[in-house]
Length: 110
Image (cartoon, rainbow, N blue to C red):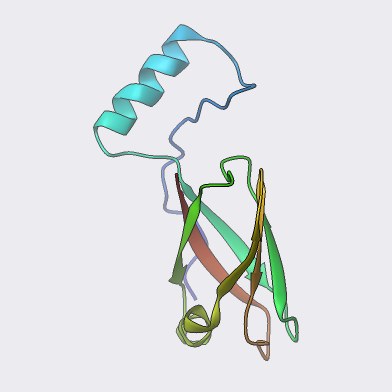
């Protein structure tokens, strides 16, 4: 299995309640213009569960989560994911029950 997020570069994010450091804001904007967005996270779908809550400060009521499998077991589960509830800083997804713990990467858009 791939090493989860170990090869990704940590691009900075400026949240609503975050720091107001001008250098950090400039670096974040320049990275966004260059296409380097800090929108990727990871979540574990627990063995036997049919619901997973994704908690991420970047999630809003308008967000879309795009999923990427890291192995064959994850690839079999991605088509079964469906949105149950989307709120501020979290979203709940229903899915088929995996036979073992499965890690997926996601991207928060919007």
